[in-house]
Image (cartoon, rainbow, N blue to C red; front, top):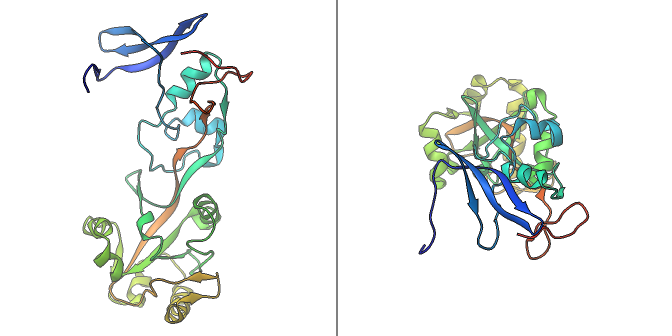
Length: 261
């Protein structure tokens, strides 16, 4: 945009100001620190803290050492800079979760696209919740109660045919697959008899379109081979808490007074 200059590899480190409020920011560059002075005000828009382990340990310890599907830049820098000058922070324990995370090489990959299609089955071969019920965080918490905090998301060829994203993941080798459920079960770390019984019951319910066991409408009865399974676990995607502001997005201090600038 006209009149806007962009600085790359320039990390904001500290808000600066005087009695009149915030007047600028100190940033770190390869050539040393630089102070940028604001003509009208400083805008902070740095996201949550899902990739700051110290903040996760402090505010959301249940998610410590869990995978994350959040951006590497979610380190809470803006929150910390604002807190350092007396800004009030709030709701820091509120986490944005992803209930269907596939982990590969330590990286979390979101599979939320299959939520309406898949059934979740734990290592004991049992379903344990309405796969679309409640909130994402409540589903994530239920999944974390299962053995090893994980389960298999089972779906069929319908997903591959209808969702290009998932088809691409399949081409990358993320999923187990087989022509029959028996062959699929043999590849998974599950109680195979229980798994097959659970899937048979789900397919039977799918013929009616309603799952009585968990009061869920079934959009896909999972009866179109091939059959697929992905080992999923909840992940931390981002966080909801942060700097307290008024309705005009002006930052407030611990006494709910506006911090100018």
